[in-house]
Image 1 (cartoon, rainbow, N blue to C red):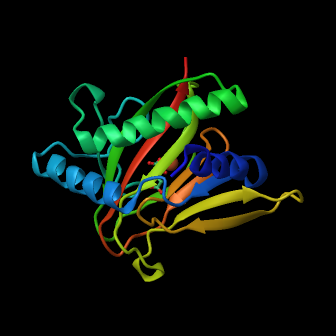
Image 2 (cartoon, helix red, strand yellow; image 1 turned 180 degrees about the vertical axis):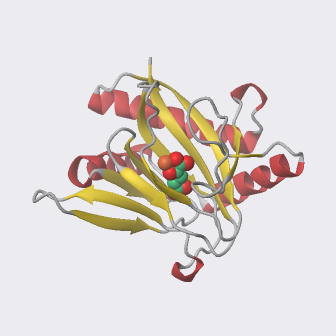
Length: 203
Ligand SMILES: O=C(O)CCC(=O)C(=O)O
Ligand SMILES: [Fe+2]
């Protein structure tokens, strides 16, 4: 797919709704390859229970139940390189069109076992103001509404009330929003839920 065709709607969504969603950020084949890679990394024993806070010390299952593994570009496999390259193209696009001065990305795989969730939170750590945009790409085959696991996004209305939009974690779909702005939550998933989550950072 032509790059602006997938990048432009993301930025348009952020500007008009506060968040952007696009399908086909990864093709079905790319999703399958990256999901397979995730499972291989997990089988190698590389995944750890996700922690809360920037010291990565507190594991709190009542807040989040996912397991994660950080992508390392120095040992990236072809399937991982496809995603890293696409994200880097997106960074260039955002810098050309929005002058955000993005520098790099930090990305981790996430696997939510059935029944797990991530309670309402903001992504930016108090001590890390480099995180500008949160990007999540889903790696799930044939995800249905009944599978749960929606990303719930809390949006402020002009009158001070809030509304909640939900996004299904459909394979190949990318969601992006400003890390210090939008509170969000992962609702309990009824089946294993796979994604790559990350942050686009300034210098
Ligand atoms: O997987 C998602 O939909 C969101 C994950 C998330 O909020 C996070 O990892 O900070
Ligand atoms: Fe988050």
